[in-house]
Length: 354
Image 1 (cartoon, rainbow, N blue to C red):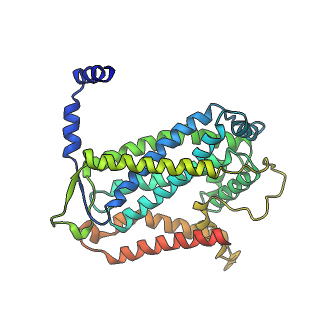
Image 2 (image 1 turned 180 degrees about the vertical axis):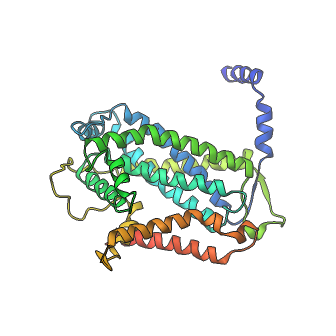
Image 3 (image 1 turned 120 degrees about the horizontal axis):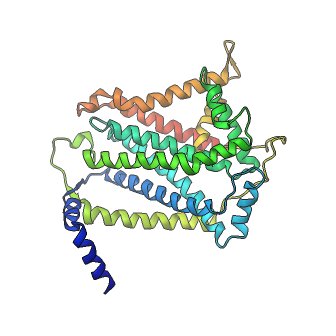
């Protein structure tokens, strides 16, 4: 009896029927690459999961170098099922970054960035950068020796950029070295600045998707192809996929809870064999390819500049691929996209196995 009354109360105030008609009128193309559409929905679901679990953890976390590590231990050992929510947050973050990469590379290889969808690519690319910074800033909050050393290396690498490197390093660290100021700054980024920016970008991204509609492969443009309504067909598929993803995250959280190392000590040497998170491994392995000095110039600086130029070119692909913007095939940029994907996967695997 409660639900019919609530439904009538809503119907009196809002035109739900019009919203249903709008959802049913939205058609989704069907083709052999349409599974990539669902990667965007999975990413959205994982972002929501991160916000929820992050808010729960924030009730008990203390962002101070004297208490941060201990507060994590308390969450895991003393708070009722605190270990589960911390593990859920960890694995949600890992899978979120995985699906952002899958969604971005899927967009790249299917040329879904072509005109007039360039801003979809821009917002998606920036969301990838934010996701990685989410991971890095959340990583430091453990304040264990592995996280401390990894953040010191990551921010130090940013400092190798010519002209702006020193400013970026000091801005991120809140000083010349990784200290309590760095922890406070990263905490502010993680719980306030990045969530606000990401919510705005996700809203913009979804708005652009609604405005432009779903992209189709170049080979299908101007040809007849099947379509299905978003509601209820695709909507229910999204819900089922989200339930499966939730089951996977929960299984990983229960069976593989993340470890906590020793408390960070700024005066101690970094532990042997330390590696950054998986999404930084390609960068680490790239730096290893460069010698310490090249024609008298610092090899690390040259490596960072080369990687930065490669990332910047990756960002500009929608504006450089003129053939796709005219609705034509562009095999050169397909090859470029495959090279980027293979390089990222190969270097990441090499980093895992080395």
